[in-house]
Each structure stands twice: as C-alpha cells, then as structure tokens.
Image (cartoon, rainbow, N blue to C red; front, side, top):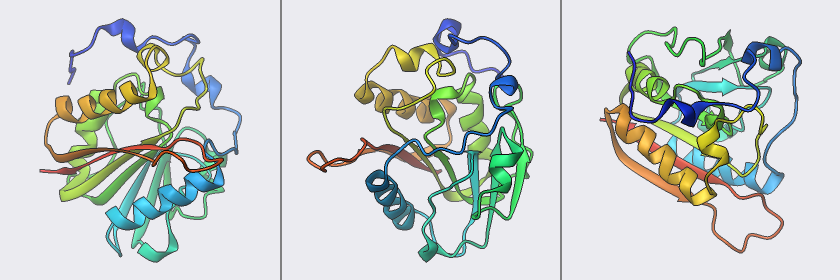
Length: 208
C-alpha cells in the first residue's frame, strides 16, 4: 500500500545512508528530561487501561510506562537489539526497520494500546505505519504519539526539520487523518510555565 498524500521530498533525510547503519551502535540516552518523562508517564496512565497489551513502536531502552497500569504484556519494536534487551518494560521485542518495511508483524486487533515516543520524526512512510497501527489495534484502542524539540537531525525527515513545534502537532494530526480509521484525534502540549522542563507534545487517537 502506498499513500501518496505528501511530496516525496518531504521525507528526504540529510543522511540518506541505510538507517540500519546509524542504529548499529546502541544509544542509551533519553530525549526528554525528568519533568517531561513524569508528565508523559501520567498521560500514559490516563490513556492506557490496566492489564493492557501494549506495543512500544520504535522502542529503545526505556518505555516510560507507569507501574500503575500493570500491563498484561509489552512488546517492543525497534532498531537496536541491545537497547531493546535492556528495556525492563518489555516482555518481547522485534528488530525491524519501519522505513524499509512498514508492515507490522502482528495479527489484526492484537493490542489495546500502541505508543510511539520521541521517534515519529524519523518515519519515512508515516501514513503506511499509522495505517498498520490501526490494523493491529483493537477497536477503541489508543495510539499515543509523543515528541519534543530534540532529534537526531541527520535522520529526521525534511518536513520535520523545516517546521515548528506547533506545525509538528498539525503534521502528526494529519498523519492520523490521512491514514484513516481513527477517531477522537487529540493534540496536546505540556502547559507553558513548567520550569526547567523540555517541551512535550502528544497527539493521540482511538481506533474507530
């Protein structure tokens, strides 16, 4: 499936080499500070039901899921096995480059929730991935996409680098709309005035 709603050059990257090469070395860093992580965890607690089956999409060594939701199972899909092995939230992991193959290796309606944390800016085929997420979500399941103002700029897509934080909210909202099958699309940002906190933005929606 190809969803041609954007010019192809929107998804060019400064570093056009294979993404697999970039992620050969583990990068065990967090891209948001402690205040933003706490805020994100609270939003996860508010949006994800207890005992949920969760897919952590574009996962790394930390998922920031709160202990209070007591998930039934968490599966991570990411680019570096060392990072995924070191993630204490994961029960299972899959190594897959979504920019090469956006088809998720899971059955239909397998997950109560899917999270994509500070990684959406690297997707070269976002509409295909968002459509796949919709397929693997249960009806009413939630997809939570969060991001800040940090990234690896050589691997972020051109449209992300060329737009503002507010435009990123609009762009991710548009991904949901164009992928189809979502309802209650909500764009959220951390309240201004939070001292010494990285900005945090979230767009979430439910499978119709």
